[in-house]
Length: 256
Image (cartoon, rainbow, N blue to C red; front, side, top):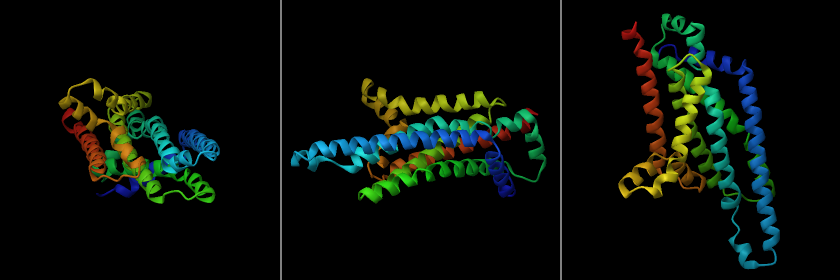
């Protein structure tokens, strides 16, 4: 992949020189902090109330009442934030005309796509790192199940890869960043809520809808369950849209 690192470094520089990243990071950390505070407050209140009833106290679970809602909320916030991160990847270069200059360099299409993809992934990882102090606070006041914590972050990472790949694909279709964000957010939202219709359809269509649901595969990770079928779904999803983005770029050769 000749030219991967120059594209990767350029994209990172563009991300960190753009105010969009800092606005997204501010909103993401603010919402993550709120959701963590809300989950811990609810757990603390339930613990005080359960102090009078040993049976209720035995039913309290840090994983179910704090970690699972926290990771689920982070997934929704990423669904909203990732399209804002990926919208400029190809759209901006198309609008400014620098994409033609990019293709005159000795850089392969796969290096250009993967360089932009991994730069966006690094930005998302940076956002996830900002939530680690919440886990440190949890470890200070309690004993969280670290297996569930690792599983939750693994699920967020794999799901973020699929979000970024679809955002990259959407950005390759247009030179308008707002349209790219909309083209990314719409399908992601559809795949997020599509599972709601699973019970309204027949068994065959319901199983297909259930498999396509991003939430169904993510839920297991938030519960501390690492299922290879869920990981495979996200890897196939990511590979499909990276492959499709490559085909879009290669189509310039026959479109002229």
